[in-house]
Amino acid sequence: MDEVDSAIVHHLQVDGRLSNRALAEKLGIAPSTCLERTRLLHRRGIIQGYKAQVSLRALNRPVQAMVSAQIRPLRRNVVAAFEQSVTRLPEVVSVYTMAGSDDFLVHVTAQDIDHLHAFLLDQFTNRREIVGFRTAIIYQHLTNPVLDPLPPTDPQG
Amino acid sequence: MDEVDSAIVHHLQVDGRLSNRALAEKLGIAPSTCLERTRLLHRRGIIQGYKAQVSLRALNRPVQAMVSAQIRPLRRNVVAAFEQSVTRLPEVVSVYTMAGSDDFLVHVTAQDIDHLHAFLLDQFTNRREIVGFRTAIIYQHLTNPVLDPLPPTDPQG
DNA sequence: CCGTGGCCCGAATTTCATTCGGCTCAACGC
DNA sequence: GCGTTGAGCCGAATGAAATTCGGGCCACGG
Image (cartoon, rainbow over all chains, first blue to last red):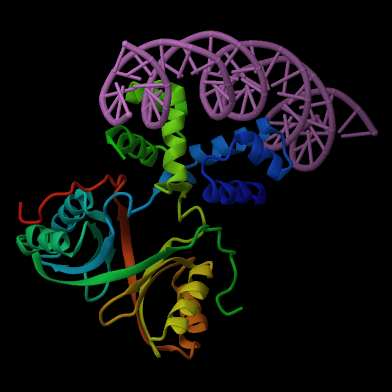
């Protein structure tokens, strides 16, 4: 993971369909070298894959909310079952398993407020293990376009 | 946005580097047709781009946290400035602008707990507009691999 | 019945991915 | 000092893919 690797990762985060030749040219290395580097990044699990970014509006999902939930008992199998089943629901974008007063944050999307409400009644109110949840509407979700490696500095410095 | 378009979006969410030929074959259409469809999805803004998925461990960011913050005054320019500047910080993955008791949720990553603490002291404690924030550690972050269009059903049904 | 436009197709061309033999250089042992 | 070894890089050659484009099919409207 030298600086060439970092640059590859950086550029592929900006444009995941960048051609190998174009990438090589950006870095000032030969296409064959670039290909080998990139393949190694895959094999080492540093690049885990590529995904198209899709407009939530176009997917008929303009309403977003964050649901914080507490479940009991907090046993391994209960936690794992909750994570797995909730992640699979089509309305769910992602699930954060948390330390603190909430056990989970669930990012959900829906067609409109009515569907959001129906979803919560069907999927959260009904579950035995959920002892409480709160829903907060998301006005906007901004994402950092690129995550580069953080330098190994001293936190004091 | 017929079912062929949905299938294209679906497959490119699973594998953003799927070749046009392979995609065409999956859908049972000609490569030229598939290319035209896909280009239209780009032009209409339905597919917004492609991003490599990168291991946070490999980027030296094994620690994740969710920071909920309240800012005052809740004026348009203050809100926008906060969103913009925070999203740009390298430790920040994404920023949710919220309705409810918290104004923002900020997903942050750091090398370790010490760096997380230093980051919060530097970037949150110092800001005038932040009147309070709480930090919760994220044990795990699961993501739904695919977001398909939600059907236009009745929420009661 | 006869355009017209939307959508699709397949062949041709250009560009790209991938392979592979060879080069350089630094580290190592003798 | 000197040969060996291995890692990493390069560029030409080959095969595959992206892209273009002329044309076919079909539903629709006059």
